Length: 405
Image (cartoon, helix red, strand yellow):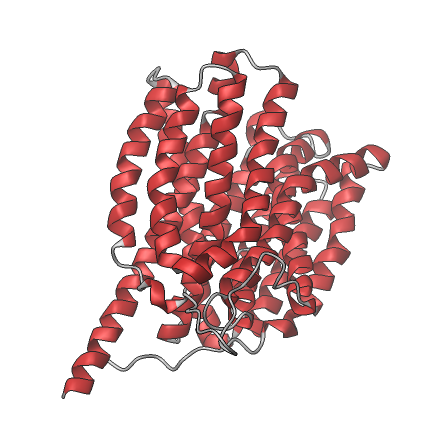
């Protein structure tokens, strides 16, 4: 009887943790998207030049990349739950600090700190999602990334509302930050305990803590190359879909914006059902199908002369590509094993994905200038094909059997 009670208690704890980590992804996405939604206001209010603003925004990505290298050891020492709890409480205050910045230097410092916290939280929350998958025997990563995608849409709409109401960026950030502190504390209450992925020092021949130099294995680099490609595709849609539809396909400016809208909506929809499809068909099969659908969508974008068909192509690209990154994140985390291994592997993997997101738009611009934007997008098809052909590395995710109810 005692064992049954303990088992049932464990089942409830894991179920709570699943919803808790979903909420953490939502909070993290809301912080980031709230910041981004008022960048034009920050530029205007502080009188920033394009170059100064670009340098400040670059600080965010570079700070996140650097901090990710140390996130694995932090999780190993303190557990992902504690790292997450600190990050979700501090991040809204840093967001408010960005709104209160009085000049470019203050803004740069606040953005730098938020980037560091964002990078740390990104690794820790994905590591916790892997632990939840391992403990429950069920896929949750796609739903977590869906929560992030949905939060981006919600935060953008809220940002538009504050802007329309004439509120300053500082007022916007302070109100949203206050809500997020409360929401973050409530969300983290349901996380699994720090012992779920904290490494205890045992001395002698015991387990060693991860260091910032560990985790650079061949398999992680293969996953990293796949994630790098997937992020370049996503960055392409974010930065260049509107330009492509307007300049190459003759869409109006209003219609050209629908390419990204269609992509984002289908991406969120695909991620909402991604976990169920993973459990039903397996990660490798779903990865192949998703990659093929994404490739078909990209081919439609490149080959069709109609901007309407181009929007449909971006929608297919979002639908098929929706499962790629969550599946890779999950596979990387499980490849790292128990303890801090998942966080260490994820910190190395996210280095590749963030690099893809940072340099992807610039790479596409350079190639487009040398050839054309259409040929540049066509050149992404072989890269996507190579990612799909490596779907076999999705196999072998180790999870416990689901806890009995």
